[in-house]
Image 1 (cartoon, rainbow, N blue to C red):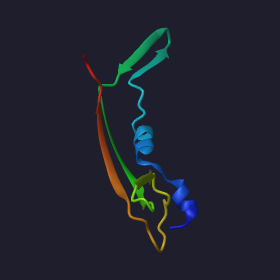
Image 2: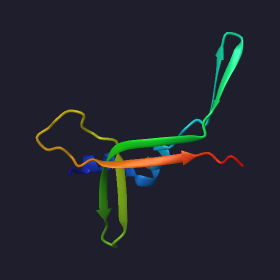
Image 3: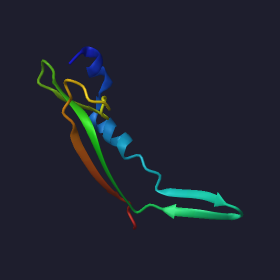
Length: 91
């Protein structure tokens, strides 16, 4: 993997944070009425590419990005699957 491709990956925790950014309260106007939705649960499933790097001190870094390729190529990357269920605290 080239240095540029490695730089495309973001930390797995940052990837998960971006993946799970959800507006739990949605509001819109329809004529003179306000329509609101309160999201209680969200299930997200997404393919991703992952890169694992171990530095000279043995520290492990895991990076992830959405799939880079949307067309068939002669060498396809391995896609991993991340599935997350988020539930809001109702208390």
